[in-house]
Length: 404
Image (tube, rainbow, N blue to C red):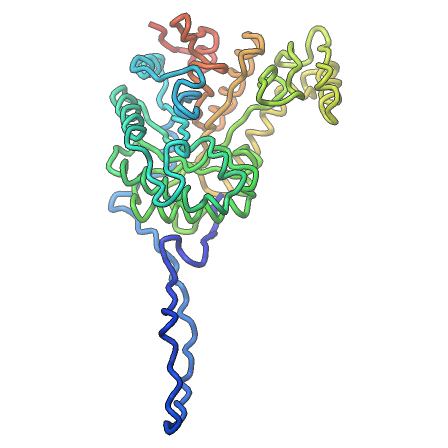
């Protein structure tokens, strides 16, 4: 997912020009014209070398180490923690560890807490909040994945924000470079929009080089464009010389099931009553607005009528998607991590349990570690209001989970 995709000039290199008054003065009239000096060919920009640490980590072991995880979604990824209804509590880390999870993925909207202009300083108070999250995760024996989430301006105007994006990551790794090796860095969640495959490949390469000048030890978690899905893995280019990485992808298909009723997904996803697997016992009537879509009516026609073997909400599409992810990983010699999967609360709980169980089992059968989306909000495995786990959903993820 990252083949040799460097820019010609490393981001830290500044090309200097001679001052305006340094031009050669006109010789006096009696002087002989200067002898022409051959212009030497330009010196090639050296290819940056990623010096490995004295005791490098095994990326395959690092990927398997992630095991079974959960996302701390809707907290630090909100514009301000609490605006999306959840503030992280110390007890959450204990609950997650005691239930049997190995890893927490921490989605973070760093861009909302950094200066807009150089040097793009990240707010110290916010950094201290992230410190607290890492400390509580590690104290409870959990692996911690830090990512950059919801940098919306970067998606819409990547060229204008690349410098800021990299500068923020330089600050992050400078602060956490001495953390244990079960702290991971994930440069960006779900690249899309202006971050095409080629552009994201170039920027990711520059970002990795900038990170490795500061921290050449911790494992990086990288993803492709196209919203970080399994299709994007096929176009992810791996940086030549980089050895310590895990490749991640997200999976939410069929979206008309997992995102039914999610207002942020648009009118096409407002049909409720979609069960999994299909076909339903009673045909589902399409929401009138969704029916205006060019593809939704066709999907529901197949969903309502086709047997499970060929149904778009059947078993085969999930198996096929995971197989494609595995092939992409094998071609790039990388271990895979399913960094997000989940079904929104508008789906019936039994269908959520069915789908989650199947995706988790199929991922594990292929040796893929995973992190469920998410802990305690709309997709949540934990009911914060009731102060207890959704038992069936937790068992779908961790069959031998403890709920004490």
